[in-house]
Image (cartoon, rainbow, N blue to C red; front, side, top):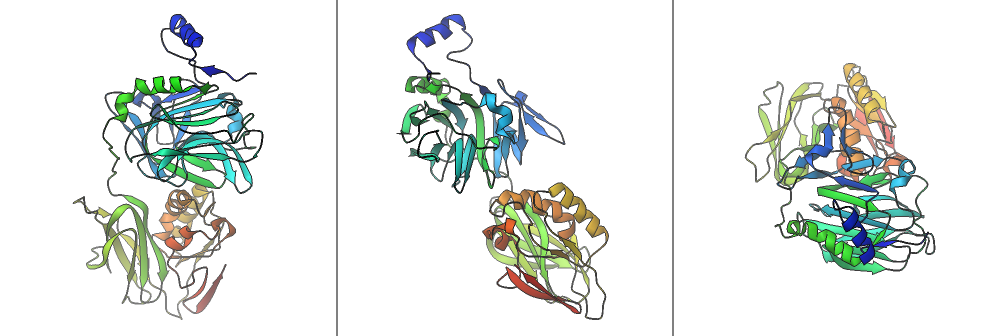
Length: 459
């Protein structure tokens, strides 16, 4: 079928005279993230579409009210709004030949691979689909058409965004021309792609995140509205759409600042007969303070100089085979109230003549519910430590797999006993592994002694 373009005089006249309720064609899907669209329970949170399917909210989110109906705030990391994990089940809502994607958003945290809406796969030689997003300083639009070059073309905008400021971003493709508009004006275009849109064999249809088979980068910022059309917008229509809410674009930048909170709750790392290491992560730079002692008053204190988001304290001078109590604390410079965790316990390494037991797990990747149950069961047996033989997470470079899968599910166990892991193939030798563990160098192989046994950990 020929590519249709809208905002022509005749088309506009038809819609204005026949249907006074709206101007222009109907979108395939339209989400307006007001309070009425969001339904939340203990088990699941969804957002209803004004046209099209409902979507499921993932990660940490909140609704931010205002005089115009408010917006949805996503806090980054593992956040996202999943329309479906398999785009094939929503084909009627995804354009084939031409598309226009319109979104009102703020970007509160730059990302190398930021995503606002799309169904994309960019994994080595496999490149297909499309995504409207952003990078470290500008908005982006990626798409693959059926003709050469048989890979995604990434349009990088010219206008730099300001964190926390509202923008109207539109991506358009008519089968020959890719265009990216920011606040009603053409920002960049390309004729590198042509032909029908080529989709992956299977990928997620996702809002509020850049997501494919091996990556997930959750958006941090507000999303007010997203619409998708199976038409290629003309510049006049884009300008007209922007003018509907142009007042938003002149508001001062206002990034959302969340209170200090744990990204990863305190957990135990490498222990000996006379020491124990405690680690945790916060969402803002903060102080590192650890209270500990032989009872729950935790009367002794260690303070680490400086501010950090990844906190590590090694407690020296402990007694062998002894139970201790500890409590982690952090304070952000702009907040008076400290962030504290409930008191935890640990036991130092036993003497050589003392029997001990330990838990063994592996392949916890992609199974936080199951691994969480196993962690609770294992702690019920009161082991001295956990041996993890690899594949802690599904995708090592994906930070959300650590902060939202592995550590929360394993916390019932690893807040009481240290865990000794080795790299699996799913970790992909990622920086996250080395950031989140504190082991004898070089960390991808090492040895440790416990009681009368020496363990050799080999990648």
